[in-house]
Amino acid sequence: MLNLQQLQHCFHHPKQPGQSTQLCFDLSVEAGDIVALVGPSGAGKSTLLAMVAGFLTPESGTLTVNGQPICQLHPANRPLSILFQEHNLFPHLSVYENIALGLSPALKLNNEEKEHVVVAAAKVGLQSYLERLPEQLSGGQRQRVALARCLIRQRPLLLLDEPFSALDPALRKEMLELVRKLAREQNTTVLMVTHSPEDALKIADKCAFIYQGTVKVFGPCQDVLTSPSDPALKRYLGE
Image (cartoon, rainbow, N blue to C red; front, top):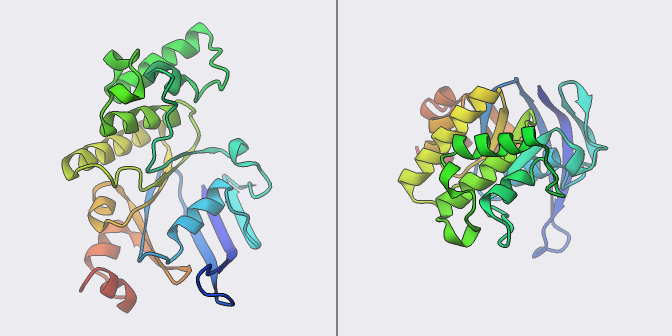
């Protein structure tokens, strides 16, 4: 479903003039899979996600979704949605309007689309909060609104850039379970950056260990994180 072949980017270190790191990613993700990207800070997890999203242009290599190259597509035209750590809600718009933006930036919806907004809010447990403004919501509720806005777009790929890392552990677990449930219902493929192996085990089918700009280990999440054999992965997990 998602295929990266020799997708390369050269990262120049801003605090070390003349120093650079070459990143090169190979990764193949099947439709409906939830894949966690784990690894030390600076390994290239966010860079990989940024190239898939279109925020960063790779210097070479191929990137396809369902067999179609997407490198030339503007981020807004790619067949994906992305959820950040910052929920990116518009403070002057209601919960209903923030979700509706996923269907129409101009908020011009027909009756069927309006119903879709209500259903999306219900799926994330916010059907009774539709008239509220973001400032009237908790942090977890704001992330639920952002998640509903992503899912209502019905894109086949969902990118998660540590969206729940600021939430307390119980709420984070709840949100991960919600993402897993909704992704299964819509057959959405998920690529999630996380610093938490525990979070990866809660939600992911597969796990990619990113190390020094490459996908060093990739496989079933349980195998990768509970029975590591790669020395760098063992160090990362503290074993």
